[in-house]
Image 1: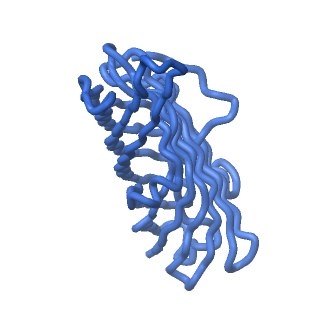
Image 2 (image 1 turned 30 degrees about the vertical axis):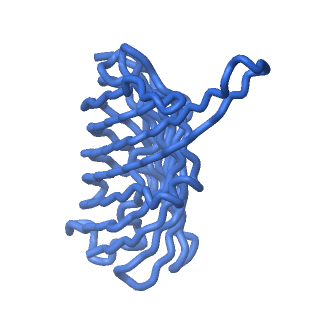
Image 3 (image 1 turned 180 degrees about the vertical axis):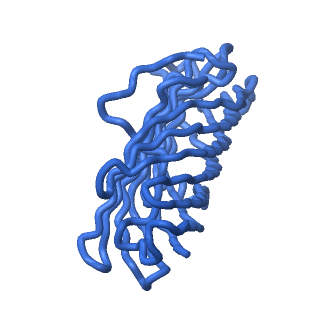
Length: 255
């Protein structure tokens, strides 16, 4: 287990905004709940992944994800009473990519070299956290994040396959972070959540979520925004340095 300093700019694990002061109609002494589902996330992915025997570059742009109908789906549940907040979030992402490139040597005796790279990647994140509202709208967060990652990278050179690079593993990290939410009026609000790992299996596990909120009714909201996630692990069975970032949109129901 490695200990890490908290980065000056913390980055987010909690995508959604728990109940704001404007939503606490039932009083501070009662539990209030928020369910966010579904939340669709369509990120681009870049970085490297593999194991001790080798790594492969990963570069999956947003256009490729849309083309292949690969996406991430998230669900969140929050419970708040007085200034205390508890929650659980799960996230699943499956990506496939098939790229090809050809190198033409400047020699009549050396044939063209064509390389095909197939990437099949699955990542799942599950957060269990608690928090305390220190001032209006600002919540200190801490919790545990479970990360599962599986990468299968196949390489084919001029029609001849070589041994694929495969890796998979489970990691656990202790996170700390901040969440701030503000409603500008009865319909529009903004949420910013940041977090980073301070100890755990990964060297780096950090993210940021910026979400706009539009209130459809007293109990229903639409959330939309942008999410960034970066995970680095250079010493585990699964070695990754992967960044995922892209737009997200979803439905939130409070009760």
